[in-house]
Length: 87
Image (cartoon, rainbow, N blue to C red):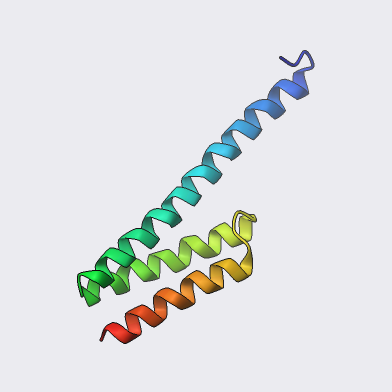
């Protein structure tokens, strides 16, 4: 355990940021799974709404450095193609 006051605060800040990052990554993964499920069920409206929110959260993850830009673009492109071919 740290003895210096600033180190103690840094530990708290890091723990909070780690938790927030984990929540965002989990939300992205869950949205991808839900979108895939909607595509499998041929539910166009639900797939489109989930995909729009997925784009928002994936872009947030990229801006925070949690996901690389090319990875995010690839994920979005693959799901967009699946939704387009579903119609």
